[in-house]
Length: 304
Ligand code: NCD
Image: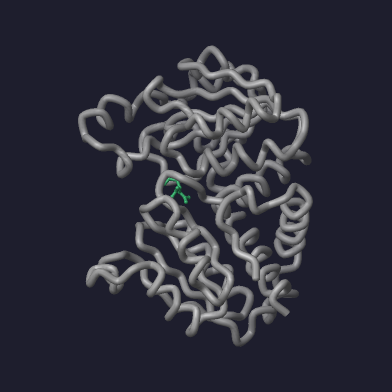
């Protein structure tokens, strides 16, 4: 049985297959409308979510399957002190596949160890968020036609931003990419990812300035400062508006820059950018449902 817990579980070849499959589903959505007939997906959301939960639910419903689950820890037996291990043991006797989001790093891995059905990590604390990565890669592939030989900028909260960690590790599987990591000193990329960058021998820069570096980027991945992972509100308030992408900054960028953001956005992208053809974040969110359809379909194929 296969699970998807981190992007380390994905080979470049497998990512390419999922992206091709998602593109095919985008073209012919009706062709897969019954692929999950009779199957049940359990959505276990211990932490809030709009896009991820609704896109997983949409994906399963569009495949003809059904969805059960909860949308906050408060409405689950976690409030009574039940462990993730016990919950997943039960849930996997009700459902055929489980999606879990949890505020603690490692929760999805624990779930996968006790589950009798495939488990998909929909975000574990500040660690990983591999299906957002598939969404991001589908968007990049659609707009650039490739996932290699790109200069990719990551900007914002690179310390706690799980979408950054997952996407960066996935991009390392493709050759010729260069990385520009823009963050305040306090929110730099974790050392374990810096080690991966070094081990791969790729070109990367760490900087505080978005304005000075935006002209070199093909992709700009903006992120929100992850308020819920901070130890104190004071630090959050000091750092939350460190980078705001506005028209003035975007004027320095390449005409074919792709601006991505996993959303939700707070202040880091001015709404004046939304109509710029380089702003792809709403399209990106739309693609999320299709790539999740491709993933669910594939995990069941492996099961058969
Ligand atoms: C991200 C997440 O939850 O990590 N959102 C998402 O899944 N689309 C990013 C964020 O919350 O900032």
